[in-house]
Image (tube, rainbow, N blue to C red):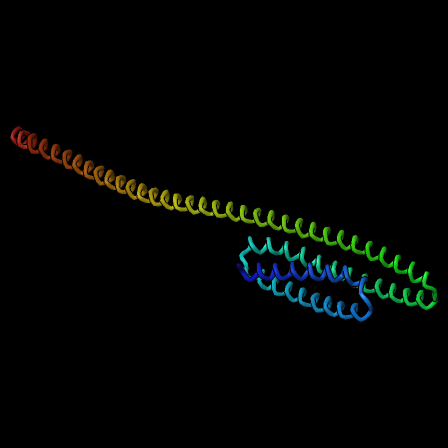
Length: 234
């Protein structure tokens, strides 16, 4: 298991723990609530540090893996920000309800009032448990959807990378064939030049032989008819 995957597991565990603590926040007394708030604050800080470490690890990945984990990282950051907002709202609501409860206790002095208040608190706790269960389910659905999108992005990146690899091999093969073609053209050009030079030499030799033949014929004719002409004249 890679370090990044370990960070992902730690972050998922922290998010689940923070969600559970936020769900219990309104059910605790003042002292227990303060202790729970301290735990939530520490867990939120730890989750933020984990996201920063994950961001550093993502930078070291290759481009295809980096795009996939960047999607996961953005989903995790959005989820942490949502939990921070929910935690603040729940904490403020719990404090408001606590203040209202103290005011109600001060104003009511009868046992029947305490009974109805206990029933009301029990109903409130039940409703909060249902709300927390729905929030946890929605969070799980969002994480599942984000993970599915990240997997699809990773698959798409791998496919693009594979296509680029095939295109690179095709270009390299075309370049090799082009070099071979250039080499063949060079050899053909040299052969053609050699043939042209040979033909030129043969033509020069032929012209030379022809000139020599004409000169020989002329000399022969001169030598044949010149003595006869001299004899007739004398």
